[in-house]
Length: 17
Image (cartoon, rainbow, N blue to C red; front, top):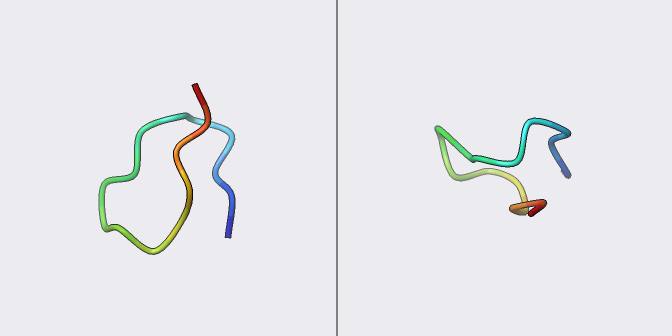
């Protein structure tokens, strides 16, 4: 899953810079 925040806390998504 892609998070709009940018930083992945858990590690179950991609990093959006």
